[in-house]
Image 1 (cartoon, rainbow, N blue to C red):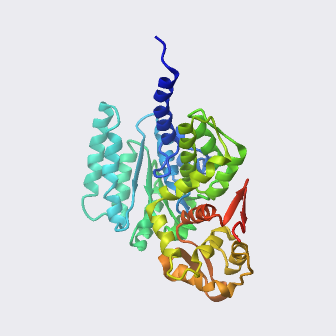
Image 2: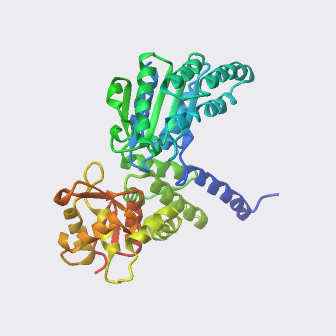
Image 3: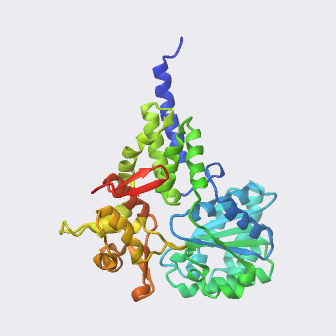
Length: 419
């Protein structure tokens, strides 16, 4: 008996939607090699450190660029190349942590990995981990942590990843991490320590790092290149037999502003719409509805931050226009813009010449109240601004497109749609 074509399609659609959800994951880090795209240079630097005894690494960059996904990949690839008793261990910091409480997480994280080993290896290594745990029972210091790592790593070489180190409440504790790195490096322990955090430079993560620069590889995570974002989209669509026009791909890449979160968010919404409509190719006509849905599905914290920044009982305040101009302003290599950089896009949005004095009070409000959506550096005429949360910038641009204050033309975003 033949199966009706409609029944077959009904069966395939849920499977394709599930595969699509697996490929586009805006709310969680990528933890499988098959789904990880781009970042070849950064992965190469990590494994250069892993292969050199006594070398360690720190991965830094702004929020939302994929540092946690990279740390998962480092752990996954190291484990997949396992030739004997090797361990890839990862844990993360929290806001109330200091040096000692961070390392209280070490032994449980190691045990999680040991549990996955064959039974004979599990038992042998379990006894080694017990000895390391005894060392850390009281008064956790860099010396005791070194001894505990050394006990385990001499039996099973490790890649040890500590994520979100920027969240440590007591920043002076990070000096102790520098002390630990120096001891591990000088003693040639077969363990590579990789620390990951949000910062413009390593100074923002680890005090005293200059004393260990020889043994600490500094790996910056910039925003993703357009080709890397395109790869996320193209490979994700390929997994469910979809394609997309060049215009659509270029536009989504531009709207993502180098942040993988938005490539995953918009890419997944567009793919879902195409599958449900039975289309095999995603065109630019799908984008308007996808942007509106992306605004609805964006992180709640981003939606709240935007509302705090722009809502006003005064309908003529037009905070939303100024924030949109900030999102479209030219920036330096670490994301800061000067007030003069806001003048041109704001003038085009509002259709009238806007000089700095006419909106400077808005910038101050964004940085001193109104959700503190902008952060500053410098004083007086040298003051510059940038988005405190980088994920807010693309959201603001998407809102501008939805409100028809800007329009998209291929890879360009044109201003002044609304007069």
